[in-house]
Length: 267
Image 1 (tube, rainbow, N blue to C red):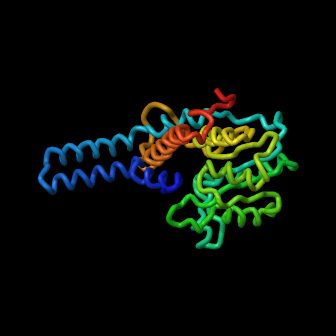
Image 2: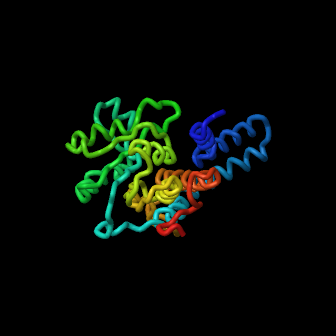
């Protein structure tokens, strides 16, 4: 039977908004080719309108905003931090291996937070957790890219690396194993702001006591039109938002998160 990880990859391949629109276009052209002119023309029109709407309407912003605003920035001066756990996703594992130099993507703020927080909490344990999220190229692992980056900074000895996890549920599970069990005390959880509600719910479900430290924000406005319409940006944000809301739903109904939309005080 396929694993949860494999099923999630297969499902998202077909459910991703950009893929759905391409599939619609292919089906519309196929319908026209076999003579279903009315159906094909209707689908082509809808497809074109959807692409035009994506240029001018920041739907992704509207879907990302409630996720990114769910957890405010914490007052670090008021925290007694036992440890810091940073979730992978900001590194480009394959590119780092190919070019023999650490490479990062738009979520690099996750990794950038490591030296900042390690300096602010010199006694805290620091864990980076990130293996491979790819079903096709699992040999390239995020922790390897971060390993090289930390060595360049001269703080490699300060960070515990976990490189076997493939998703957020495994981030929490395998990090606990690295530490000899779910740790006691308060831990800062570092990940992208849109991903924070699901991440907090997953870690709480496994018994971690975490305080959210969100980074890597995307949304600019929740309503209205963009002053500078950009198809690629709106499509990226919609892709990210839909994936995260689906993730919240699936993780909740498979009992991998403590509640559907976790908040700062379990509300």
